[in-house]
Image: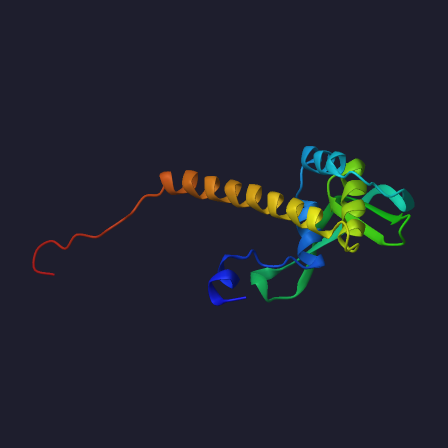
Length: 155
């Protein structure tokens, strides 16, 4: 592979990054990706899906002593595929179906036969998130006010 091909090839997404992207996916994205898989393995629940609370901790000034900021609602699920892979999904909110889909796609990501399809899903989610961030930045930039100081007199 030459230097030009390395620059054009999308960076490989590791499992941690993949799980982060799945946690931000919409239910429609996950459902469509599941329907697109031709040879679906059987999926057995190991845990959940279930909803609960986690304590969110913060730090004063980013480096001070930690304190309990409050609680956040999260949903999680763990599944086992008929091919043996175990996947985990967790995300903010109460959408148990999204958590289950995320667990299924995490397990499929570990299977070499399904990995290309799951990587395509990851890229789709990443592109949507990037577009949303870009739109938000443009909306924020439109309200930007530049202040400047004019020197008067002999100062």
